[in-house]
Length: 155
Image (cartoon, rainbow, N blue to C red; front, side, top):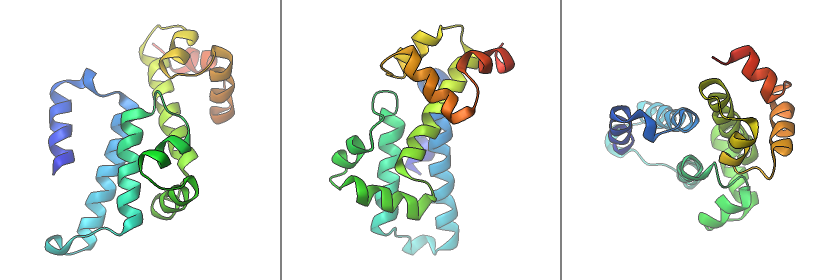
């Protein structure tokens, strides 16, 4: 319910919540809804790995632009990187790195499609060390460069 309230507040001010963050948060909400549907609502409880995964996703949504390292999230949650990765993989089927990468790529695609900011500005917004490292990261994940993506899908 807290997430629904948060989403309601967000929908009244869409600029407050980037598209990629919204997508990741919505995935978390769907996970919670599916879990609750499968259990008695009065006795809903999450195991440790599910709670840890939800905490990780919440932190990811809040910090993905600045923090790309699984170690940061593990430290914030007082667990080892290995345990966090194991818990997230068991719950979501994805590694911590994959979750971080998906959110970064979603945000990068959104920024490339919806703004006229330069590749360098977008790389700075996403806290990459350089436009070159951002472009290499983007191409490794999507098989096209940021500029090619913008030409194909941009305004």
